[in-house]
Length: 354
Ligand SMILES: NC(=O)c1ccc[n+]([C@@H]2O[C@H](COP(=O)([O-])OP(=O)(O)OC[C@H]3O[C@@H](n4cnc5c(N)ncnc54)[C@H](O)[C@@H]3O)[C@@H](O)[C@H]2O)c1
Figure 1: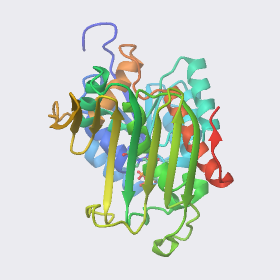
Figure 2: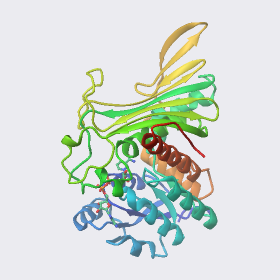
Figure 3: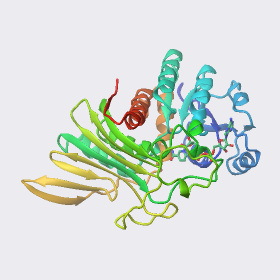
Figure 4: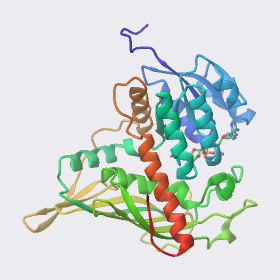
């Protein structure tokens, strides 16, 4: 038994045992205060594999049964997007702290309800964005916190693939009613959040955007009614702007390198300031030194697993030791930007974010 009133371990339930669920289970053993208490998945074969690898104490098909367990303190929701809201709400109503994978929900109205529910019950809501905890992001954030970049006025957020429509895994990624959207809500949300986080999460004011579905001929699953690319220009209250480019599919030129799975692929963040610019991959500072632009590689601080640090922060937030880095208010602002991108595209004009 660990010492101190705050030393009780947190009993976790992982709901959805696909890739992200496995990542959370993998790092749980490394964290002093975490215990993998239970898992839930409708797919019995997947659940059995998960049990064999990570040995949760309990295992359920139906996540509602898992939520009814009084010993459970917190859940990590790794379900298809359309289930993020009902599962998060049910978990909060059952008195459990909630970690939910990205996208937090499929629209901002759902996220507002979750945020209100968590606040009403004094529970922690945390959305999954392990990229905020990578060594590169932490190093970039530390440089920016020290004012090294000066006044931040622009960022480019990019996650593009040439042949990377996710398919063959239940078909939900390409079906609007189950995914909430396509490339934007799947990988664009990561790219946007990375630069927004580095910029200090300024308040978004308006969006001009266009989304496209041009590559239906590459899709194999029965339904493909979401966008395969999105391009957006977002204005923030502090005068800064973000330029977002994301695609699952596109005829990308050869300056975008071939990736392992999805054809040509580039996933990067570049944040521009009056004194310097930071690029995430490879981590480099482009700094104005007396009018001369210098290129300075930045060393990574360590190689600590981003999933581990993310889970540690969730636990610290539950125990009141630190604020949640990926909190409900930021999840709400992020979903407002996503909503506005879809609305702007539909209306063919710039739309305000309120
Ligand atoms: N953070 C990341 O980098 C990252 C990476 C991949 C996926 N994700 C997110 O994680 C979520 C899941 O993605 P995935 O790729 O694992 O999807 P997936 O379809 O492979 O896995 C979802 C799992 O949920 C189970 N499931 C579905 N409905 C259920 C229900 N009602 N009760 C219990 N189990 C149910 C399925 O059987 C399946 O095993 C998505 O929201 C996705 O956006 C995040």
